[in-house]
Image 1 (cartoon, one colour):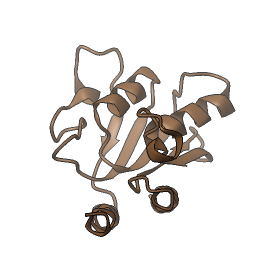
Image 2 (cartoon, helix red, strand yellow; image 1 turned 60 degrees about the vertical axis):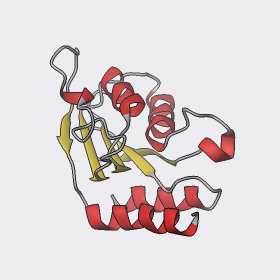
Image 3 (cartoon, helix red, strand yellow; image 1 turned 120 degrees about the vertical axis):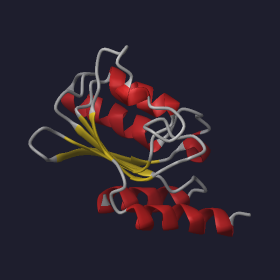
Image 4 (cartoon, one colour; image 1 turned 90 degrees about the horizontal axis):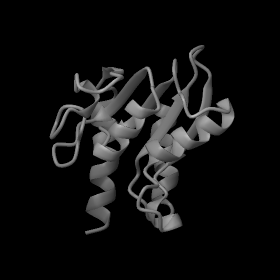
Length: 143
């Protein structure tokens, strides 16, 4: 999670919300990381999770991220939760809960929907206070 926090801090330098994500392979080796890039790229889909999963897919040579763990500082939104299900991510670890847009238990629970073909293991609230503080500080400074 500390690596994801560092990736998120880098995103805030470009004006993006400081959300970071890291993908680890089945052996626990880091294979990709990213911060939000929406402001930097003008791409509405450039959430940290999406960018990190794209990079991991490039490294692995496959869109299937089976066996991988995605670590992210904020509970994924609907788009990101859907993408990690479709990518077959095995485990999701996230920091702060997102009561306004979270799709892993807060607002929706996309990853545990029994109608879908894949349901990753979920661990939420890791370094929650630190992850939430990063976001709170960013928005305080930008209001």
